[in-house]
Amino acid sequence: MPRLLSSTAILLLIALLTGTGCRSRKVHPEKKPAATAPADLKSLSIERNLRREIQAWLGTPYRYGGNTTKGTDCSGFVQAVYQRVYGIALPRTSRDMYAKSKKIKASDLREGDLVFFDENGKGVSHVGIYLGEGQYVHASSSKGVVLTPLNSAWSKSKWAGAGRYR
Image 1 (cartoon, rainbow, N blue to C red):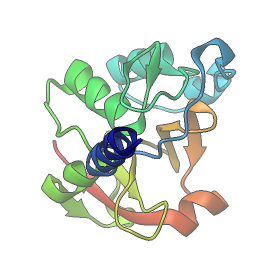
Image 2: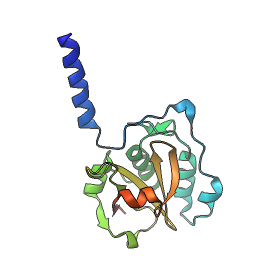
Image 3: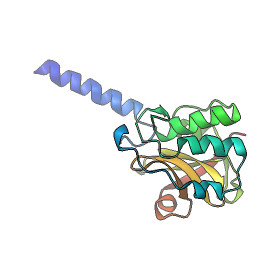
């Protein structure tokens, strides 16, 4: 019994130390959420390579620690898109992305800038990519990769800041 307890304590410590990216609620891949309607993405005037990459990810289910179109968390999604579209290697966690970005005002947001959120009052824990026209794309723990308005109630209540890498 003591061996089991110490193994559990070690696993808990590992989970706490590595859980600084996105929320850890899991969505099972077989329950892939519906993608945001393509018309929503098509109505945004964004760079063609970014549009194509985002389209490929829409509807991808949330998977903590994931970074592929089979399942991804917020920072894995942002990291993969940035590497493919801009050739820029970002840190793995949303907290580190925020720490190393050039901070910008919300009023200065441009396509491709990163938007950061504090989901639990403990600092940056979520990230998305700003697409323009008040929209950003991110890996939601409940809906997978979706477009969301920056002026949504959730986004406004959890806003932590914005950053730029390019």
